[in-house]
Image (cartoon, rainbow, N blue to C red):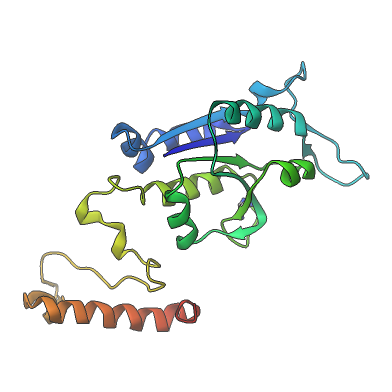
Length: 225
Ligand code: ADE
């Protein structure tokens, strides 16, 4: 899988892309992540990528030209499954969306900034608009990082078996069961007996009961999905 991230702040993503799960996935040859500096694509001699909005509104707006130039250059090299724009008014990012995007071959993530981007880009080039939650970030870089992390760890081979993504919270619209490690008794705080029993069927049943109980208590909305 290949992810191209377009940003005015590449330095914000470089560190992240070259450490964390993304670095490991790239080293294994399973994923390629490329960060593109939008300023490299502007025809403006001062390297500006934003301008005042028509209509006299407040804030600055990212211009069509550099975004179009960058996306066109990428599209000339390969086909893309999705061209995503990170924005607080987009569709809510969640585990099913991460699952779906992890099956794509090539995606672009365009990070928003300033007051927004010229709406014509959204109408003509963007295929999916995504928000990571109901709050406003200063830019889309953190949103792109969150998405890339959640997507890449689902690409087959990225996680080892024991870290398997299958038992994650949200994977079946259920929160994960609690986990424990040695010692089984720490200052009198005991690990649930059943986990020490070696009885696989009973342990599975306990895990499901715990998942359901925690979901009902903490995220009842998930059970309605
Ligand atoms: N850009 C600013 N806020 C955002 C959010 N909540 N999700 C995605 N992109 C954003």
